[in-house]
Image 1 (cartoon, rainbow, N blue to C red):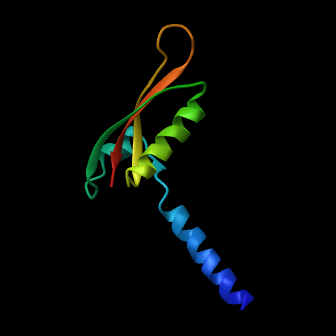
Image 2 (image 1 turned 90 degrees about the horizontal axis):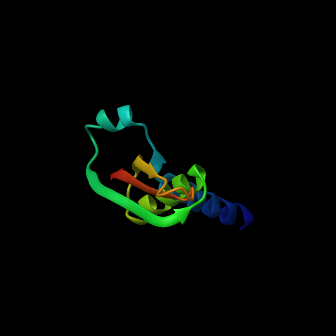
Length: 91
């Protein structure tokens, strides 16, 4: 019984990880002929670091069913150092 439960848990964890969006580079985005663009997402809340921006973009990409995201803008408005981000997302 324990083995069956562990096998089911492992399958669930593998499926969750397989669904996570992957960050890609600009050259990868240009060469992705077999994917469909889902548009652009915008993260308008203030983020302190680039890694927070990447995480927020990944979470929003996942929520929209995207498999890949390409950050196209990490913007620091004014001089307060807070970051706003946007990305092209693909399925």
